[in-house]
Amino acid sequence: MTEYKGLGEVTGKRVLVRSDLNVPLDGTTITDDGRIRASVPTIKALADAGARVVVTAHLGRPKGEPDPAYSLAPVASRLAELLDRPVAFATDTVGASAQETVAALGDGEVALLENVRFNAGETSKDDAERGAFADQLAALADAFVSDGFGVVHRKQASVYDVAQRLPHAMGGLVATEIDVLRRLTVEPKRPYVVVLGGSKVSDKLGVIDNLLGKADKLLIGGGMVFTFLKAEGHEVGQSLLEEDQLDTVRSYQQRAQELGVEIVLPTDIVVADSFGDEASARVVPATDIPADTLGLDIGPESGKAFAAALADARTVFWNGPMGVFEQAAFAEGTHAVAEALTRVEGLSVVGGGDSAAAVRALGFDEDAFGHISTGGGASLEYLEGKELPGITVLEQGDS
Ligand code: ADP
Ligand code: MG
Image (cartoon, protein in one colour):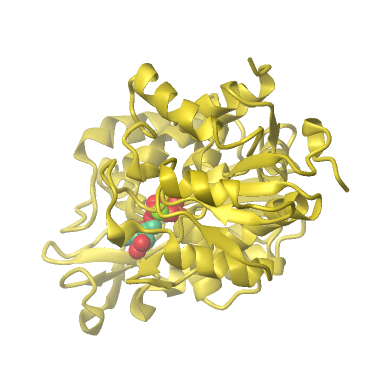
């Protein structure tokens, strides 16, 4: 292959690829390389086609200036291992190092630019500032491939503005992700069960609104549980709680009832005396959480009930761990749900960075799931029915 999607001939061309390489790091050690592995096929396809591949990506949330703690250098090494070919690393985003690195690339060679968020223009809300940075990025390439699914819901220079400045195409990873999301929204096979958890409660409540019209059952776990329990009038001790969302949650419960959608809450909870205190972990009824404790996982009875609710599902979307799975004492609920998903006959989708990391950390084979999405926020916004700027821009012509 020497052509790539809508780009035509790419041999000898400099192709800027926006990948999502935002992996969890412990110092300089990558603790889960899932996103790097997911990015490899597109980079490899372009390199095999003879393109000069310039990869741009972000890591974490630096403050718009260089910060060694967020350097992509460790990612460059891992990417080279996975690609089984050298990856030249530029120590800046668009400056002298980036320009020299790109100029030195031969056909089929790959470079990675330093963390794109080291430049304030990347995430600026000011169109002119973002555009000026996008001009510099675009000057490094002849074409653009958008493959960072985790960021397509962001109107950022390397996602959105650069696509307006170069001939562009959707990368294979983004195309796959969008295809799976379509299957979740357009005539999903029933029963369709959605499992929600995690800690970004207010971010995720919005998706419930849209899912109420689509899913047959909604299983609620993780930190979101306590806002639901409180809305029903139960005390939740020191657990994660979004007081200002209580009315929203009540309105969801009301609508679910009207629509005949079942919202399933856990009946038992693993609590502890303080966050992460495994020694004090114990199971209590969900309606009887002691005031001086906090809930860190769904209990074993709930794990079984959730698995049973998933047993006959034909479509499942799961976002957000059921508990603080990073610690063994609070990982059972997430394990139970993950296991139930592996048995689903139909489409099972795991979305969300931590959820994807959880299934791998708990030792599940990725192939046991229909699809493991690399982007939590992006998939949620799609399911909420919001427009994804990084996708919309690809559907428009370049200038
Ligand atoms: P994702 O990345 O899959 O979208 P989130 O980022 O929303 O998920 O949440 C993941 C985090 O939620 C995990 O680090 C986990 O420890 C935490 N979590 C799960 N349940 C609870 C809980 N009951 N209280 C506090 N944190 C929780
Ligand atoms: Mg997360």
